[in-house]
Image (cartoon, rainbow, N blue to C red; front, side, top):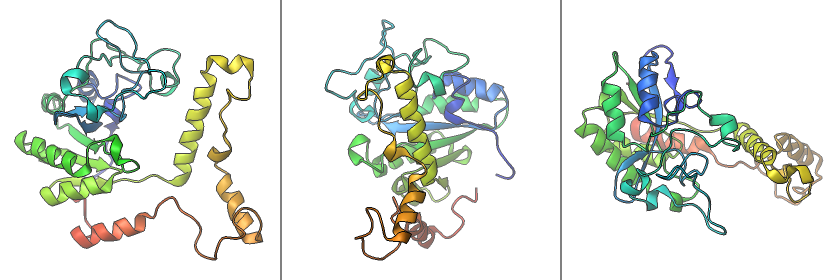
Length: 287
């Protein structure tokens, strides 16, 4: 691949229902070079397209058209705990109005009747495109909490098997923030292109701050101006890193008793990069 590519994120979220066959078909017709899709493993071993690790109440409607609601005191089911037959019953063709999610992901062209698709169906749509249409497959396994998804090794193995059987290895690029999944895929199929992605600390903080503000703005209790209704944004302040650095330099603040050493970091990608280069060399995505 040479030159910039025009890729439809989540199949074209914001234009069409995200991670749906309808979105992929329209992205191909609109002239995109490819689409990024989110793939994870269901309980019965099927590779399905869905971004969140749990069912999203702003996306999922029952066969009767009722929006999914979170049970009191419990979380919504994980994708890994549901079979494909259970997932297939939900309509994901539009975003719930007035939800915080609708403010950032509501498609311009909703399409009722769209269901959570299989990866094999997405490949079939890509093949029908008038010209070459790439699929950037993000392996959705949780590197922060392994209980939220299938294991990276299991998901990577199922994904490589699917791409091989569909003979789609040349038109797929594996993407992910969970590097063990990509490493496993690369070991199983050295020819597959893998893009190892990461997040900047500031971008994570800003995203969390924005989502917190959106959730507050859509909260029906906002008019009461109660202190309990407003989320605490102190820990989401993008300027806090600078303040902490100044405090460390002056010897004041919460870090004054901390032993001397490098500043704190959420994680150190340099170590992982070195490990990957030792395994595969510098050119990990030459295809």
